[in-house]
Image (cartoon, rainbow, N blue to C red; front, top):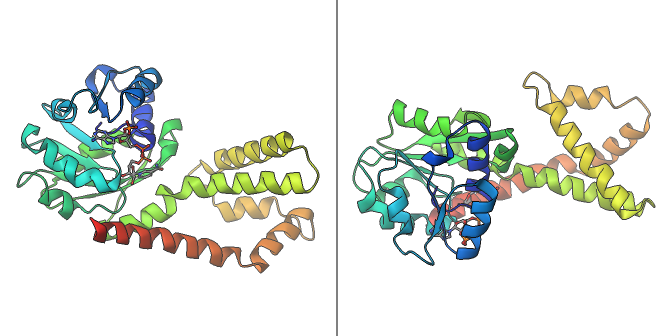
Length: 269
Ligand SMILES: NC(=O)c1ccc[n+]([C@@H]2O[C@H](COP(=O)([O-])OP(=O)(O)OC[C@H]3O[C@@H](n4cnc5c(N)ncnc54)[C@H](OP(=O)(O)O)[C@@H]3O)[C@@H](O)[C@H]2O)c1
């Protein structure tokens, strides 16, 4: 795991909770402070490029799979940095928004198998969602190796690479939408006169509980919503007010902005 921040940290937490042997994982970060924090959180050794400029190359050397978890703008530099440390069969998996497999392939040795993924942070709690697409030379075996990283901690879906920005707009960025909803519900509760801590707790546990109810793949959110929306009741008053104010359009526009930002990042890199 090269870069062990929010996203790779969530993937690693999911892998360890699903039974991956920590002794089989090497990780790097940039700063000493982050290395210490990540060691404490995950219970594995984490090296840092601040202290050891060879940390990424050492971690990548001999690895079956290398997961690139740095910010998009650093992905190609990191690919070049580790190029000579990789074995020809090492699968290079990226979690970065907007960085295409072609861009990574250009920065890696000819023929290096590459898999681009779009995971999300609920992998931490075993409820993640991941879209993935293979590069030019990625075989079925390479895709399966990438899928195994996530299999114990979320649902994994193969998509065409040109759909990854749309996956990011739904599930990659999606946890933030749910957190925003909890924030706004807490603020709305306080406006209605509840004490702020109580409003926060009610909103937090409601969004978390509703999320748990949605975890069953056979349930349809519209059916769950209708089940709690009595005709002419309080919930219907709120839902109709949201929809009349254009909530559906606002959400679609926000998701379009996410996908558009993914395309911009591709162009910038
Ligand atoms: N966050 C999400 O929900 C989410 C969802 C889908 C995809 N992603 C993708 O995940 C990637 C990382 O995002 P993030 O939110 O996890 O960012 P983050 O929390 O800032 O993590 C970035 C990590 O990279 C490390 N790093 C920086 N330079 C490095 C280097 N030269 N060598 C090794 N490690 C280095 C950082 O270490 P320091 O802490 O020491 O700087 C940190 O551990 C991005 O490409 C993003 O597009 C994120």
